Image (cartoon, rainbow, N blue to C red):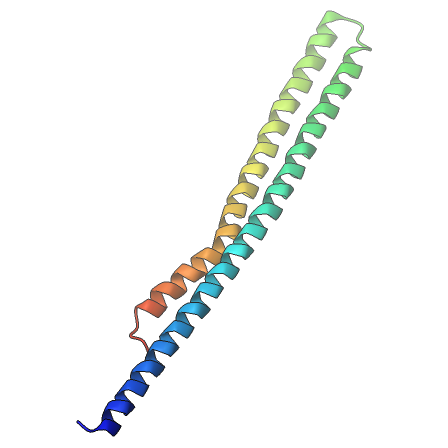
Length: 134
């Protein structure tokens, strides 16, 4: 083996290591960006869920006030019972519908905020499944 061949092999090996280090650095940067994006999506989604929850409670409170006002003008016990039953049934239906919306929004939030991380995992499997290019 000549000195020239040895130097050439050492140069190729060094270039290969540098390229691998560069690829690893770039991959790590992409992971950080994906984590940042996922966190931003999660925080924004949680804030939105909070707003939706507050709107739901406000709507239920408004419904309760309307029911109390309606009860204030009754002329008989039978009329009061009918109004109470109507408002109670409507409150339960509204609560169930709003809860279903919140559950759907929470599931969508989970999917949306996990998507950047899922994409990085897919890329990792694809990248590390191939041999390093020299």
